[in-house]
Image (cartoon, rainbow, N blue to C red):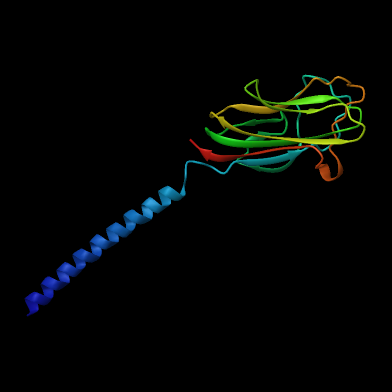
Length: 175
């Protein structure tokens, strides 16, 4: 009988060791899956001041950073550098003063991926553009003025609480 008890104890110890090994493997797998290779990337920025006498061909530098998860937006240069390849969503809103005429281009590596136009108008005009696009790692995205037909009267508003004109984006998923 003592031999049977010893045999059961040995079997029990082996089962416990095997189960503990399996639990450790599962914990390791959960940690690996939780630490995804797809980081949280998101930014929201606006103009801290009005831009006056806006000319064509000027890169817009949204300098009032509200959110910059992943630090992919550079407010000094006004550009977003994709830290990972994936599908990104960008949106931007421009508020211009009356009698302005301006087109704003969204560029990726110097190629158009979106644009909005604020044509001649008799009051302030707020226009928004949104773009869903695939980016490769290190692609460079920014906003640039184009077709500023009346630079002497074309102003882009920062506005109250710096929310009239803004630029935002985020990573939906990695490839």
